[in-house]
Length: 208
Image (cartoon, rainbow, N blue to C red; front, top):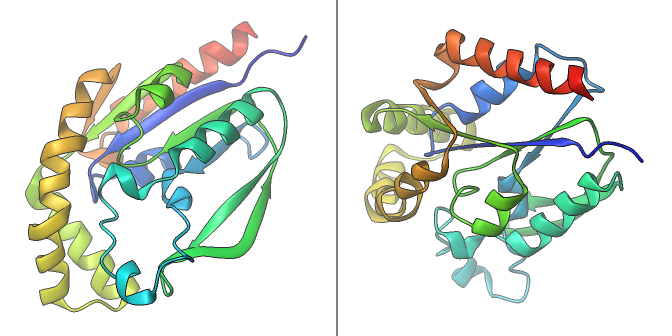
């Protein structure tokens, strides 16, 4: 019987550096070893709603995610079955017709702002990580990303942060930190923490 893959959750607020931490860990291993499953791909399908309603989606709220599908896919991967990962189209604010064929690997990193908020997801994880970064750095990173990469205006990013991102962080994301096994301050800049995570993964793999 094949060993179950190691499942690692990497959570943290928007702009905390989750992706940098995940990327840094992945760089220590071969492409055949680690699979990254992003919660962002699992926003709910909204094709049944008119575009005007889709525009009001709060992407920082737990109800925005299709965690049922994410959990089903993780269980399939843990049972060494491939999945068809959904793709979310932010231009039309709903799920794309595309899917990505994903094969299971020895280590699965689940990354997302609210992966520690759902107890069902937490129960699937062997290691739970929370990337803890000060709010001023997170908003600056989000401003730079949304303006440069997504063509947003400064006013729209700030308005979204005040009205949805910050309240959701305080209500849902920050409290989920209590479920973390490891808290990494300052994200991808914390090379010591990333070294420790990589060493832990190497130890687990060596025991298999």
